[in-house]
Length: 387
Image (cartoon, rainbow, N blue to C red; front, top):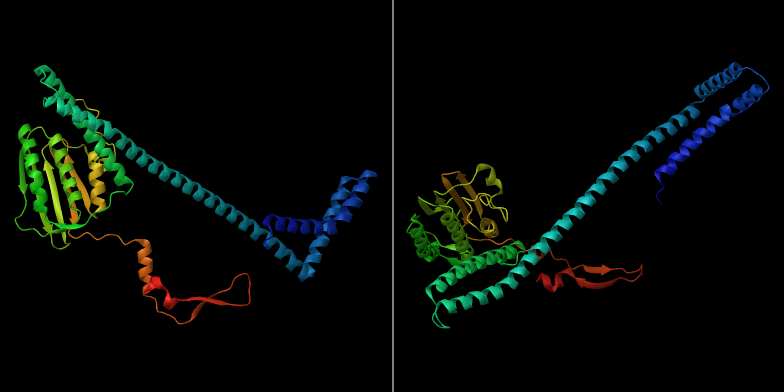
C-alpha cells in the first residue's frame, strides 16, 4: 500500500514539533506564568536561551539523538524534492494527455472532412451528369433545331458545366487519396504508352494557345512495375497546370533513367508566369492557389491539382520537387522507383517473424483463477497459422 508523501511529511513535522515541545515546553510554560505574575520579558528570553543551550549540549553529547535528528531533516528534504519532481512529472503527463486528445480531435476532424467531401462529391456528380447529358442532346439537335444564338448560349453552359464537373472530380479524387481509399494497382507497363496517350491531347491544347510542346523521351527505356493510372494522372495534372499558367513560350517534358538508384525521372518545365519564392514551401497544400488573389493571373480551379499529384507520388513511393522563378516559369521534377514495393502490413510482418522463431515441443500451459491444475491448451509447433 502506497502512503501519500504529504502524510509522511506531516508525520516528520509532527515529530519535530513534539521534540521541540519536550525540550522547550516546560520553559515556555514557566516563563509565560512568570510574565503573567509581573516578571520581565528579559527573563523569558533568558529561559529560552538556557533551554536552547541545554538542547544543543544534549544533542552534542548524544550521538544517537544527533543522528536521528539529521536523518529526519534529510528525509524531509528528500521527500520535498521528490514531491516537486513528482509534481513536474504529473504536469508533463497532463500536458501529454492534452496533446494526445487534441491530436485525436484533429484526426477525427480530418476524417470527417474527407467523408464530407466524398459524400458531397458523389451527390453533386449525379445531377450534373444529367445536366451535361441534356445539354449535349440539345446542342446535337436531338430535340429539334435551335437558333444560332441559343446554340452559343448552350455551348457556354456546357463549357462551364464541364469545368464544374472537373472540380467535383478533383474533390472526389482528393478525398479518396486523403482517406487511403484508392489502392495502388501494380502492373508492368512502358512509359512510352503513357506519353503516347497524352501527346495528342496536349499538343492540341498547346496549338490552341500558340505554345510549343516538346518531348525528350529516349527510345529505349526500362519498363516500370508500378501503378500506370497514377503515373498518367501525375503527368496529366502537371501538363494541365503548365498549359493553364503559360501564355507564351514553350512546355518541355523529359524522361530519363537513374540506373544507380533503379528509378526514373520525369520533368515538366514551362515558361509560364512562375511561382513566387515564398509560396514554394506551401505549393502542394490542398486548396492552395498562388495566383487566386490576382485578377490578371487568376486561372480558376480550386487548388487541388498539385495536392493530388503529391498524394499520387507519395503513395507509389516517389518524390516531387519544384523550382520556379516569377515571370520565367516552373520546373517540376518527379523521381519514381522503377519497381514499386508495397509496405508490408503490420500483422503480416508479425506472422512472418513468428514463423522464424524456433519451434518448441514444450506444452503451452495456462493457469486460471489460481487453480492448481494446469491444462495444456496448445503447442507452439502445432499452431496452424504458423505453418
